[in-house]
Image 1 (spheres, one colour):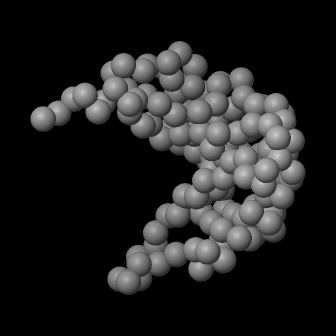
Image 2 (cartoon, one colour; image 1 turned 135 degrees about the vertical axis):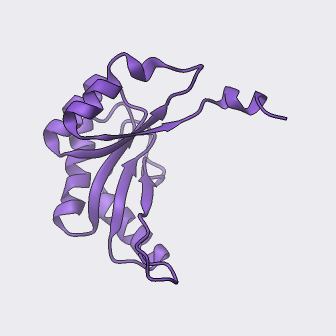
Image 3 (spheres, rainbow, N blue to C red; image 1 turned 90 degrees about the vertical axis):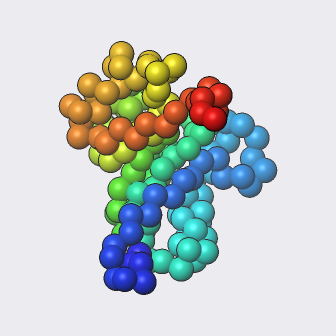
Length: 141
């Protein structure tokens, strides 16, 4: 995707549960259909970074990443990312396909990422994208 000035814009885009009415624990593996719909809505050919947000914990991460990796193989997605997963889940996901980015809470009030995630991200070459806790809303004015 390019801006009006012709500069390249990195486009991260979330995915998660299909939202197709399936009950929890049922993963429809319609990632390709969901991705195609996203590409059409955005008017682009390829998503730079496709995040799995709020994954269904009843579906093995290997199945989720396997389905998303097929989108990379098809040229619809350049890289994969995860949001809010444990170090163990990140290791398992990375064993299926390289994880380019992990988005997780990290702030003065929430430092759990320091225990394992930051070192694991550095070891695997996974970018760590921090976001502040909701408690940050109380600071300021």
